[in-house]
Image (cartoon, rainbow, N blue to C red):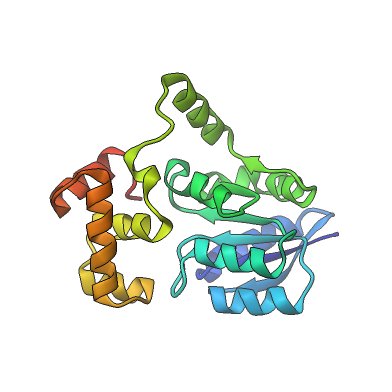
Length: 210
């Protein structure tokens, strides 16, 4: 039996995943959490074979939670489920230690196979992401300017592009407004952009806004 921890701040999503997995003979949801703090507590206290982790939750960002889970239990497979498109967070998630990445829009049809695959020690990426990676390699376009950003800089980019004010970004990231301003300055410099308008245009052009 593969015991799964589902981490998502939406109870409807958790219920849907639980129902889907409970209908299979070898999978069951034995833990649920609605934020990173709850997830880490459950990981410390229980033995799960797979964690399904939402990337966007109140409090800590999913990638930060992922890194902490891997510090606690390095061999525990963590599968990222997200509303964000694969080309936004998939490679960052995999580099941070995720066993796979699945967009929620395609989750129902691929989730069972994905959980079984990562529980067996393999990586999982969707066919869509595989095609994107192949196209990028073929076109010599694998590294876009935003790929050079740190996780925090990239998170700042996405939040600015989604229309959030500096104070709202600081609250979302649990940082001071001054620190967020530093991240903004760094990402603008790295991407050779000058204004928020240019940044937002870049994010929309590269499909970084859900």
